Image (cartoon, rainbow, N blue to C red):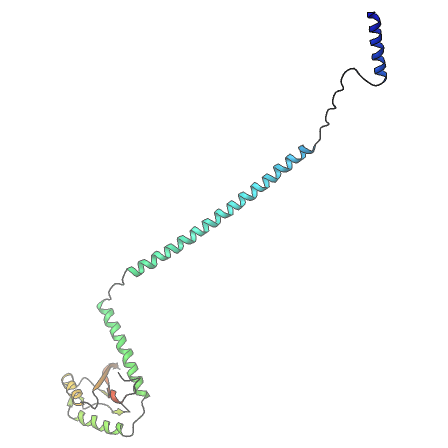
Length: 216
């Protein structure tokens, strides 16, 4: 009995084998490996390297710009410090020689303007001749000024030159100026040396007759 079963089992197994069946469970097919992952990994690595390089370049440029800005700020700050120091530190006082030179320079500039004002004046037909005669009469009473040059009177001013080397000039000049009274109450004198010889140019003026823009 047992032998028949074995034969039957062997026969059944043969039949199943012929029919394409197996008594053992079929194994799942193994997956065929692909190359897609192997390609993507190098591409991703190259992309990351390029991005890293770009970021490093941007960071380097930014650091360079920051360095330039700091350098410019340092220059501006240094300039501001110099200006502040210049404002806080007063100029040293001028020496006596410098003060005299500045005073003389201002004096010459003022007298140049006085002379220019005189040249701009016209001869007043009434005031000029009568005032000329008046000045001539006053000069006659002052021997030290008797050598005064021609007297030229215009509208509000008279001009004449005189040699200051006459005896008693310094004492008699104030007397002469005082004698002019209200007719010519203002006087300006310009001292110059020409050909080694000094002389005064006097400008006598009545400010009440001068144009408003020139009255001083």
